[in-house]
Image: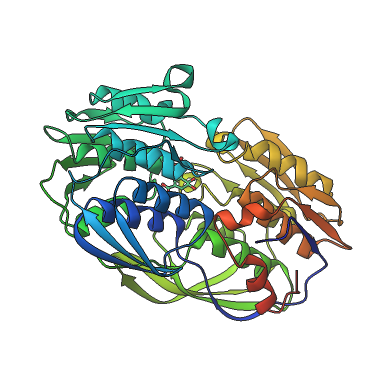
Length: 434
Ligand code: S3P
């Protein structure tokens, strides 16, 4: 169990080689698609973090046997597209939005009743974005506030294909609809307004799914079967982001992260940091289980402010808490526009990031759709709070490593939602023992 609070001191240089835990998004998808494939799938480097374990438990509750050979090695006994069974209780998605939204899509195709709930944080998050198109496909979905908030109750089956333009560039909505469309009576066409992560598409194609992609348009034909697939999950770029920023900011650092997922739809932070002057290079680029993978080296460097907007925002959507920490140390102004989605993540990340970084002395202001940060500003140690948001907790810990004096980050148990071993990894790189 992670401690509830973390205390940080100014960090020495980080040096060495490290690997990241498995990618969270890909771990969820390996479980869900493995569950409805024909035959046995083996998953290596699965992320055994709270969010993915919530997906694991729900899949088991749907009658899928999953052998846990090790915390990171799973064997999934797929039941085929039509072999899931009605769960005999409510499915608890914990605080995982990915679990709830992707499952909603998959369950919309099942001819039985499922009820999805989660913790208080998840029950506040918007679900209308998946419920509305699933209803158009013919699923019966009930939920609080007319289906806009969890819990959700789904009675699925008999879906029809639709032509649908997503209101937001969301990979969760896209993936939910791709899963549902496997069960439709005809093709589904999705128009996605931006480069949202494409892990579901890659995995579906590798499993024999009939999918065509061109210029933001996706067409999927319903299938008779998906073939089981062995997957080695790449290291999670969104976890590496914290180490990349701390190594950039602490003078004398040089770290290499091996076996890292570098799918172009995920690495917007690299483009932003490079535009700011960061020294980040990729080596040995290769493809592992259909996903781009590389080793990444970061050396400390001076940064300058930039504007982050447009398609880059979607490709960096989970990295804004840590990007703003980097921006506090950059020369000049950093402005983030077009990122209003941050208001409906695990927390309202515009409000919580601004509130907490200001406690450390950052010059940061909220905008309706982003941030304005002036730098460089020396940060001073203080007591800060994660608001139960894993990415904010880790961004604040990194801020503490570059702040003077001592920083107390409260309520850091949530770090285990995505990056178990975060503190140990920093200690291994020689920053300090947290
Ligand atoms: C995810 C998609 C993104 C991201 C989340 C994981 C996924 O959410 O923020 O952490 O695995 O599909 P949205 O699709 O809501 O943008």
